[in-house]
Image 1: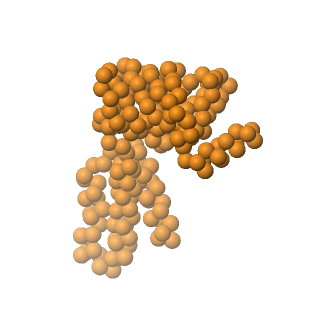
Image 2 (image 1 turned 90 degrees about the horizontal axis):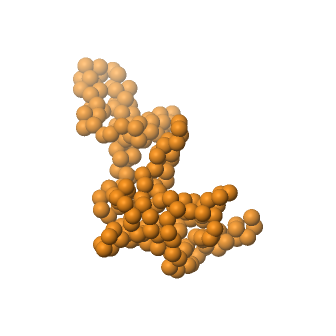
Image 3 (image 1 turned 120 degrees about the horizontal axis):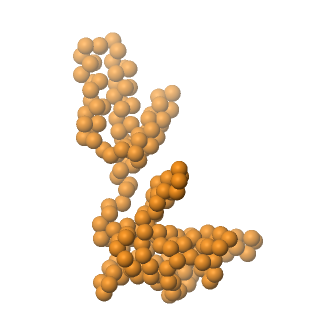
Length: 198
């Protein structure tokens, strides 16, 4: 039963960590019940369990913040809303083909901002016309403006993409295919089979 409680407070900690920052005073919160052991010796076990639950809760919050990317000039998000840039990257999953558009998830390796070329990391969601078609593993040279995703009405679209590690989007960029077949071969085969079956 204790394991269930620990799992629940861990999940709640991660959930609240996505909404709030880490306050150092929260870490002291887990230690507050421990001095009361001196006064309530017969209730030692519940006090220790309470402290453990609070520690796990705070661990969930810290875990959430520890996996967030560091946003500096080495991360693609740093270049959002800075005008037209040129990106080089690989299509890292099968493109999501819609009626009139295609959504492409591009794993970026390089950016050119003006005359400066720099290695970067991160993913960009590209919104492109349905044709021409692109495939998993295509290496693309893309030119356009990076935009921070915006929430749509009541839907937290920005948070939805952030959970997938995407903090930048680009609408209808100029695209040049540099190379093909750069993906993981077994995954390429699975995507190709799925496309033929559909």
